Structures are given as C-alpha cells and as structure tokens.
Length: 415
Ligand code: PLP
Image (tube, rainbow, N blue to C red; front, side):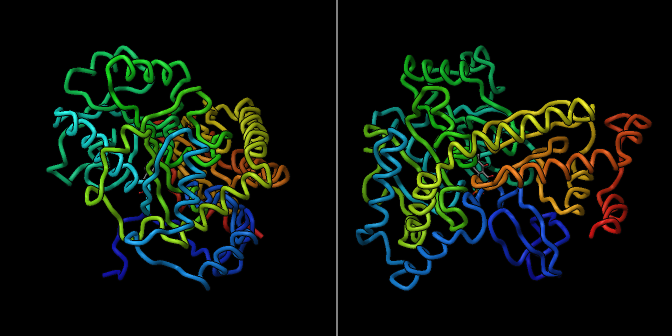
C-alpha cells in the first residue's frame, strides 16, 4: 500500500525547485511551467518580494486565531472589497471552502427572510470543488459518482443558454452560481451578454448571483476579476488559487445585505485568513499592481492565443483556441494526454481541461520570450508527433496512442 492515498494520476516526475516560470525536477532537468500549480503561482516561483514578505511574517507570527483581530486580514479584506466592489470578506483555505461558505451564506440569507430550503442553479460542466455541497453544485457526473447521498438543493443548466436558465428558475430558487470561464470543465467562456442577462434575471427575481472566480480571479483573465469584463458585479464572489500565490488561502466576499446574514457562530475556519496567508495575498496584490501584471496578462495572453491560432492553421487537429488572459485552452480532435506528455518530455509543463483540451496557465509575470519558447515546443510536438497521421488512420475517437508510448518516443530526444 502506498503511504499517500491514490487520489491523483500524477505525472512521472518530482518537482523540487522553481524560479520565475521555470521549475526543476529531482534529476536536475528544467521545465517551463505553464501549469503554475493549476493557476496558483501567480507570481511564478520564488518571487523575491514574496520570499522576503513570507520570511518576515514567519519570523513575526504565523498564526493566531480568528478569536483575535488580525491586522493583515483586515487590510486584505479592505483591499479585496475595494477592488471588487463587494462589501465584506470571509477567509478560508481553498476554493471548495470558499464555495461552501457561499452556499451556506446564500441559504442563510433566504432563511433570514423566512424562505428556507431554496435551491441553487449551476451550469453543466461547472467545477466548484470536492467538498460534499460543492460536489453537488458541480455539473460533472464523473466527480460525483460514489459519494451519495450528496446534499440536495442544486439543479444544472447548460452554460450560455438563457432560455434554459429562465425555465429552471422558479419560486424555490435562491441563487445562480457560475464560473465566468469554466476552467476544469474545458475552458468554456460564459459570454458577456449571458452574464449580463443572468445578472438582470437575478435582479428581477430577487435571486443572488454567486460568481466562482477561484480559477479566473486575481488577474488570471486580464482584469483583477473576470466579471469586470462583463460590466456586472455579483452578490457573492469566491476566490482562492492565485490569491495566495502558493500559500493556501480562499476568500468569499458578499455585498452588505447578504454578508449581514452571517453572525458569530454561523461560520468559521481555524486557519482561514491567518497572518501568513494574508501576507502572501497582500504581496500578490502589491506585485500585480507594482509590476503592472494585468497589462502583461493581456499582452502575453494575446501572444499565446495568436500563436496557438496560427498553429491551428498548420495543424488542423487543433480545432479551437479559446480563453481569456492567461487561461487559454486549445481543443483538439485527438486526446490531449499524449501531447501533454510529449511537451513535458521537451521541457514544457501544460495541463488538460477534459480529455481533448490543452490548458495553458503560465504565471502572470511570464515574459514574451518564455511564451515564444513554449509555443516553439508545442509546435515541435505537433510537427514531430505521429499523432496526426495516426488520427487520420483511426479517427479522432479511435486514437489510442498511450502517454507512456509518446514518452518513450520523446524522452530519448530530450537534452
Ligand atoms: N472552483 C473552481 C472554479 C475551481 O477551478 C476549483 C479548482 O480547480 C475549485 C473551485 C476548487 O478549489 P480547491 O481545489 O482549492 O478546493
């Protein structure tokens, strides 16, 4: 029996060190990191300001308790409320916890108005976490199997289908919970007009709009929050991943009249918003501002998207390139896993978003040269890989080249 529970199909390498957008494995080989710990390492690895701020905070105080006032938490709450336009923040340790808090808050808000037991509508293909309520909220059957009974109170509708949403809304609806861009579900963008119509529907029907920006928030999509690009503001907003730049922290923000439904004893977290985690998040926000990373995300995102679109013209197995800022997906007519293994063998770490989508999530301070280097590796993988011919022989669905096989084919070539 392995000492670590077998919950991850791990890549066959151990990463031990990082600097900027580059990481090294335990064999001394280096890789360009276009995964960023799944959209977590906002500032790349070992950013000097982050290292210094954390060392200083560790030498001062790591943790006390939410039984005390925590100045760094107060500062972070003020910063995030100012940036988002929402009014109050609750801090926790992960995306699932932030969403769990959002679900609890929405339920409590209606309970306080003598309307208990109302339901939440979310999108098919959504991903909101692996805690029980967030699993229920998630619109993907594959992650739910085996965990019955899941908490009741969630229904799902296809993303970007306003008619389906209107049909699903009824007198029992409390809230609509959406990702502005579905990351795990395949890099699927919620269209601006859809988000605006959802906001309007919530206003007309007295529903809460909850936006899950666990993956899209904190600059990832080229604005501090993706919702800004639709010109709307949610009633509840959840954040995690990139917020701490690698230190675990999640946040759930709400507008005043909704936040007021939580009082002492209604919700809590031992670790949530401790001095170390809040220092990390404040440093992330400082560096995004001082290094003008939102502009960098827009420019490098454009560079990456255009590069992939040009590649799609040369390699028709790339059927779509989509995303916002530095959350970019390339949908393939073949399986993504072998290409990811081939890229890794060439020194580039990229991720999947479902079986057919390559996902690119570099740090927000990635440079133009690093984007070019990543594009060159992806191009070489498509050029040299036998996948396209095999695909035309077997058809997209019939492509059965294993990841190991591609690894064998490519590792020998790598310097
Ligand atoms: N929400 C979204 C949109 C996510 O992408 C994720 C993780 O991928 C989660 C929630 C869950 O976050 P965590 O793994 O930190 O619990």
